Amino acid sequence: MTNAEIGRTLDQLADLSEIDGDNPFKVRAYRAAAGLLRGLDRQVADLLDEGFDLTSLKGIGKEIAEKVGVMVRTGSLPQLADLAQRIPLGLLEVIKLKGVGAKQAAALWRNLGVSDVAALEAAIADGSIASLPGFGEKTAQRLAKAIDAYHRNSGRMPLGSVDAVIGPLLARLAAVPGVGRLEVAGSYRRRRDSVGDVDLVASADDPTLLAAALTGYDEVNEVLGSGATKTSVVLHNGLQIDLRVIEPASFGAALLYFTGSKDHNVALRQRSLERGWHLNEYGLFEGGEPGKDRVGGTRLAGADEAEIYARLDLDYIPPVLREDRGEIAAAAAHSLPTLVTLSDLRGDLHMHTTWSDGRNSVVEMVDACVARGYEYLAITDHSGSLALQQGLDEEKLARQHAELDEVLAGRDDITVLRGMEVDILKDGTLDLSDEWLERLDVVLVSVHSFFDLGQAEQTARVVAAVSHPHVNVLAHPTGRLIARRDPIDLDLEAVFEACLANRVMVEHNAASKRLDLSDLHLMTAVRHGLDVVINTDAHSTAALGSMALGIDQADRAWLRAGDVVNTLPLTDLRRRLAKATSRAR
Image (tube, rainbow, N blue to C red):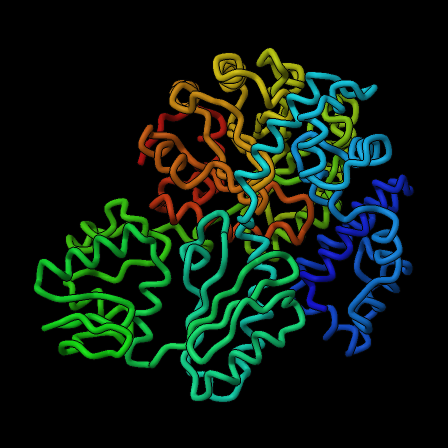
């Protein structure tokens, strides 16, 4: 089993155990272990082969370590199989619906026989949900909306989830004898925030060996088709993989074609036609366009993407920019932006510790940021209204600050800013007194409740919050969860204007489940003149690594280092947080 498969199995064990009414501490331990093991740099199977003790990892106890060992040795987990015999696996999809927890799913199953999303739709349609004690008509209407969102989002997977499974697969395929080049294409290569399927482009001496390596991969659930030039499979997590084997002379053209986007490719083909040439997945040709039989004119370019762009008098366009948003004109004018990079960042201003719902202590988070070479960080645990997240009231916040005084005394390898992610209450007020807000170095505000308010009320709520004089950052502004929860209904123009007027930064939240703001919204924010801060919202040391996903989205939005506040030196950052200076690009 790969780490991704182990993590998915533990998540399923947690979900089914919770539906079964198991100990909530045990359920949380399964989920924490799933996240930890998914985030490891090395495969668990390799570590166990070397005799590594999994219990040396914080959060992995003896029981979970034994379960992981069984999974690695046998490819399955008896406890999960036992639960699956008693509890319908379709409930794993039901609890993905917005607002449906394990207790609700269990009640629906035991009282109405709801075993999957389709059965829930039927129960809503026949009135069973509305008449079920503890539910009612309003709940039925809410569930119907959640199912609609589920259907709209199904079939796509968050980019970070795809990252977790692609690495091991590429390693397996690259090890096949005779493989020349192997590249990921499609929306994954363009780093879109969610992915429908994954295209792989390869060249190989023996395509049948490469196809066999893919169809024989342990995580393949179904083989859709296999041949000398194309093989398609579906993995256990539902992700479809399409492998195309290409002749070396056409590799660059095929990679360009299958990377997309469609609109970018259409614009390139039009540029080719204006020169009397033809561009397709086989190459750039003069004097006739070839088809599958390769018969056509003279090939001008095709083996490499860069040579195709060069023959079209264009600078090379990075995949993240290939959305037909002006990148071709910029490449022709040699004015493509110098995009922000991971190395430009000097710190992370949004993370959580064991003081609220984080998995690691203050010291562990600080040490992890030092290891990343950061100049500064902000500890921003949740405020008190979020009881499920163990938020901090003022007494608990005072104790946290006392700990910070103690653990940071004499430490000069990094600067730790004292902050909080303060909940925006329904009426737009903040979940912390002005006295305490004034004491903090950085105040993030965010919506964690009342997601279904109408646009006018939701917008007024957020505008009121960012208008507070002590607020620095609007965190994960739209509140979306990719493929799980739609954005809240905001007039973003009005929110951005309020942020600009009050010198409030907008966050791009790099957590893989959020990636919020989206790339298009980031472009709009920068056009409004807003400062952007890229944060991880990390709840563990491993989650600090999601910063790379945030950089991907910032690059898709054409952001430069000067657009991102946490590329600033500490002195300049402090001035920006104090709202003491006007924005200067």
